[in-house]
Image (cartoon, rainbow, N blue to C red):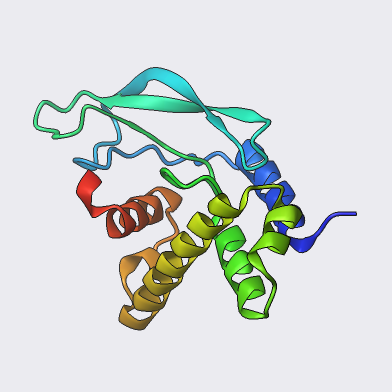
Amino acid sequence: MTTPLQSILLIATHLAKHNLTSDIICPGCGERLRIFKWGFYWRYLFSGQERTKIQRYKCRNPQCPRCTFSVLPRPLLPILRHPICFYLALLAMQRKGVKIASLANTCKHGRTVIRRCLKRARQIEAFLKNELKNRYPCCTTPSWTTFCHIFFWALFPLYR
């Protein structure tokens, strides 16, 4: 029997495999025409067992500050192992009184992993509340790539 958290991961895994983003735009300069494929890398999906191939791209614009970039399929996010909905569901369950040990058993992760996920969930929740309050472009733009960049820069400012 699957739990709500496991169901979220199964749906997110299906989306990541079949929902490839079609708009390829350089995040450094906005170039669309002078972009070419530049290898790929493998990324684990949410269960930790399956992997998916992520295409890397290179921009040929000589003024572009970026060397290479990749376009992640929905709902994969830079650096984060799980989709946003998983983090928020985990946080909601904890607020309902579910203990960390029980969440760890349900998700098949260790307690320290769940504690890190809950810490990250609080950061994500604060980011989303701030974005909705300020009506920032990440909430109005349909581009997953743009959202990923805004999200990544907000949560990981040292990697800019």
